[in-house]
Image 1 (spheres, rainbow, N blue to C red):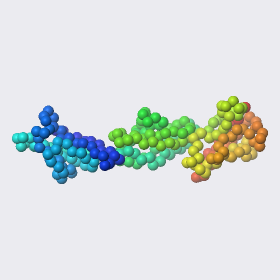
Image 2 (tube, rainbow, N blue to C red; image 1 turned 180 degrees about the vertical axis):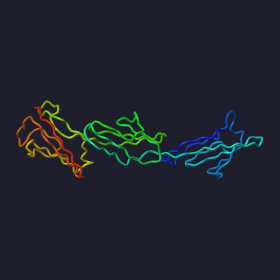
Image 3 (tube, one colour; image 1 turned 90 degrees about the vertical axis):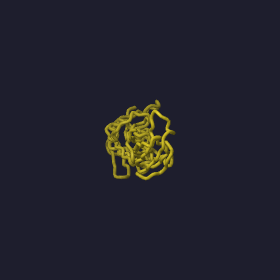
Image 4 (cartoon, rainbow, N blue to C red; image 1 turned 90 degrees about the horizontal axis):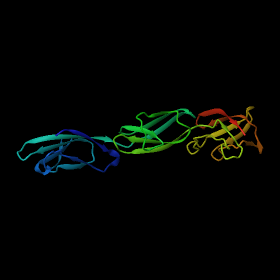
Length: 238
């Protein structure tokens, strides 16, 4: 009989898993059994036990002639991850996203598809702007957890001509529930304030005081209200 190692998903407690004595090529009932947990006898005369604690389980198996053999089964813990933080640095297509998790497990990460592909690294680079779903999977099969996050991006231009395409300019990947203090301010090239965007008004149609503004570049500043400020520019094309 060979010693073995198995995994118990501690997040499933008090569910149990079953350990077997490991008799091969014979009927299990032909033998006597003594089960020990970390060196202390816990039960006898059963070829299998149901457990929900991690540690070392030893079974002493005795045949009808009085000969004994032992087998150790080491039960190791694992569990579903807990996502602590999804740290996005950068914007648009130049960014780095770092996943910080807690848990007594071995984890892999995937984006936008629970079926993967998964990667061992906790870092993703140059993700497209917008909203994404992170999936964290325990390699030992103890479960998958997910969380939605966003990467900030902005259109390089918009065309407010009423054709239903690119008629409005607004930041991509903005979640005002996550950033309730976010304010986006748009200026013309002379520094004149054109409009401000917040949770109640987060897109611009190219108008100012009822007048269509001309084709040119406009500048914006996104202030997250937590010390982070991002500025850049975009073009209006009719």
